[in-house]
Structures are given as structure tokens and as C-alpha cells.
Image 1: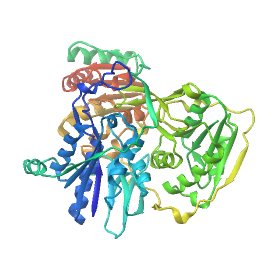
Image 2 (image 1 turned 120 degrees about the vertical axis):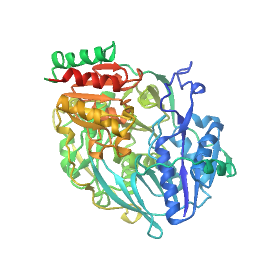
Image 3 (image 1 turned 120 degrees about the horizontal axis):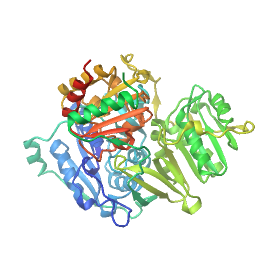
Image 4 (image 1 turned 90 degrees about the vertical axis):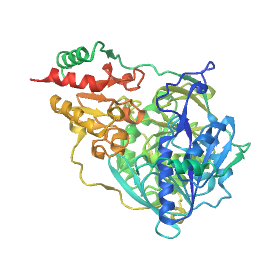
Length: 255
Length: 317
């Protein structure tokens, strides 16, 4: 089974983004970056499919040069090789540009299944997997909690619906699946994996000229507060006492 | 003209679809609403009560049960015929499944998870959170766009009703069932939930800041002292520290208790969607910039492992 996993590198979760001077993007020169967490679950699922059914895991990403670090991390966790569509403009691109860049690099690879996280922690489009499927002409299914690839030529997946509902859907292969976080327990890179990753191939590909965004950020800002928050200071003991008093006497939500 | 794609099940619209109609009313101009699926006619009757120009019911046996390929084929048909300036949709799991493929097919922009729109024509922008809600962006789409609205971003009860019922038109659409690649089975629920957080008067909820499964006991003690149920954000349930039925957020429960006390929850947008309707929200978090403070009535920037024991002491009878 030839498995592709599409990953994104995003600013670290604990980074507090600051807006640039043009107010159109963040000052990402100040950021540290990490593998987008939902994509880590997709990678893990890809590695498990390979362990069960054999084959290769190829990890793919579209982004600037720094993205090589996330690809190396995925190789250290067990992916066999990587494809990097490299272009600085992809750092801020929308799901159409990213999908187009990935599709052009992946279309001749004859993947059986393509996995990705359900959304990214930076722009949070929740689109790229489905856009990529449409561009590759593959069927897709989203927010997947279980993957069963034991039938030939098809995959049966468990989709999460809202409010605690689920549904099984069967798709013909090749197919694109967006993976829900929490579908599996993540593995981390071993020292052996890190050493082995140094010898694995990262194929660099130029972005296609037609991979352009269909939306532009005209203004980026800190959201206005809609609620007045009473901040309670002092020592832990003082704050706890004051909070309990306010919940009893002011908000009247405890007795 | 704005075309709203409403979502229904057994003839009942979800609240998010009503909100998408309200968003269209707030954007201004002529509104049409399209609805598909088995029993769509019942939902169309409800939609016709809103101040809209027309309700279009997509008639095709292949659309009775939701599939991505079926909906893309059917909706592409309607959008091509109606040529709306923009298409508004609720940002539900179903929309997330098909809208990107629909946008690719039609060559339209797709701006997701929006909380508002502003301006008309070339000055039109959609407002959406980014970076886990820490920032907001005004986004200009290229040309006609699909815009999806975050659940709860506008109030469904702000719906303007029409003086008379809007006309309902049945649009016969040909969708070839043979071209649908997804073969869905009937939706089901996991074993009956042990706890119904939607009915809880008070909820103490834990997030990543609890750090350790054993520390959840501290939150449990606080919940007991406050007469509250224990809830959690997604990462806690993903890690298996609490069962999935304790999860509050867009993929878990949407709750509206009298008191919601968030311990070590940063407030990712997916979590906020599930709890911002609570009457009184308390946030205790070490990170003063955590987005949870944006929706909190009372905030304490401190180590929860110091504040919670002090609260327990304070709550002793």
C-alpha cells in the first residue's frame, strides 16, 4: 500500500502571535515552529496502515524552506521518504494554493491512500484535504475516527458526525481521508529513528505557477473583547476567597 | 443575491442553518435558501417563514442521504443556475465535508468559520478567527465565494420573519447515483452516554493545564464541592484521561450551564463554541493571554494547583 501523509508546519501552540507592520500577517520571524498536531495523528495512522498492510509512507508538505524540519521529524517517526514543495509564498497561502501545490507534486505518484489532519492550528481552514482530493480526482471523507483497509481496492472509515453520532462510509481507492485528532496514540521519534531519518530522501519540488490563493487577508488584528472580564488578583488564597465570594454574592451561581 | 445552503435532518433544520440565514439578512440584499435531502419539504416550510425571497427544494432521489459527491453535483447545479453573489453555509461537519470540493468544482473561493461579513461588492470582507482565535482576519475573497459561519457567531433568535410565507420552489435536479463514490451506512451513537452535560447546572472543566491524569482528582474534588459535573476539553479526552462523553466543544457537547469553571483550558475556538453560552464563566489559567479570558466573566491568572486547593478550603462547610 502506497500511503501519502500531508503535513503542515505551524507556529508552536504557546506562541503569542503579533501582527506585522502591514497588518496582513504575523511576525513569524519571531515564532518557533512545530508539526501541526492534527497532522501528527494522520502520520501515526499512516504508519499503522503500513505496519498492517505493508508498503511505504511518503510524507508531503508545501511551504518555505523551514518546513524541511517538520518533514525530517516525520521521517524520524518512521515515514520512508518526503516530498517538499518549496516556496516562500506558501507560508501564507490558502487551501487552494496549498492543495494545488501538493496535487502537482503528488499526481504522478500513484498513491493508494492520502491522509492529512482535519485542520491546521494556524489558519484553520479545514479545507486542504478535500481540496487536494478534488484536484487529484480522488473521493474523500472527513473527520475520520477509524480506518479499515482490509478489503481490496476500498477503504471503510468511521466518520465522526456532530453531537456524539458516527457513520461508516466505504470509498474506492485511491482516496483522501482527513483524520480526527485522538484517533490513535502518537509515537515519538526514537534516537534510532532520528539517525535513520538523516539518510532518507526529501525530494524538493518547485510550486506550480497556477497555485494562487483565492482569498487575501486585508487586515489582521486582535479580536475585540465582547465580554467584560473581572480579573481577580492577589495571592492564590486571596484570589480563591474573592472568587468564591463573587460566585456566591454577585453571580449567585453557588450556594 | 445571497444563496444560503440550509442543512436539515428528518425535516428539522439545525440551529446553525438558521444562523446562516440571519448572517445573510445582516449582510443585506436578496436572499434565497436551498435545502436538500429526504424530508426537505418540511424544512422548507420552516425556512419560508423567514424574510427571504425564495426557498428552493432540491429534488433528486440521489440526495435523500447525504454524500459528498451527491451534494457537490446537486448544489453545483443550483449555484450555476442561480448565480448568487455569495453562498452562505453553516460551518458544520457536513459543510466541512463537501464545501471544499464544491468550491474546486465551481472555481469559487471558500472562506470558512466566519463570524461576520462587512461591506458590499468589491469592499466585501468576511471576518474569521485565526491562530486558534488569538487573532481575527478580514478576508477578501476573489470573486463569488462560499462563506461558512461558525456555530453561534450570530444569534438564531435574531431571525427576521417575513410578512407572508416565502414561495417554495421544487427544483428537479438530475444527480446520477452511479457517480457517487461514497457508500454511507446509517448513522449511529456509541454506547449511551453516562453523563448528559447539556443538563448540568454547573460544570468544572479541565484542559491541558492539568498536565497529569492523576491531577484530575483535584478538579473532581472542586466539582463535588461546587455541586458541578466534570467536563473536559478535547485534548484530555483524546489522551483517554476522561471519557469522550465529558468533552465540551464542537465535536463534543454544547453546554449552557449557570456556571462554567475552566481549569487550565486555553480556549481553542473549538472549545469556546461549546461553552460560551454559559451564564457565568470563570477561567483559571497561568497564561494571561489565553483566549479563554476573552469569554470569561471572572478570570484568575495563576497556577491552578495553588488556586484550586485554596478554593476547596474556602468551600468547606
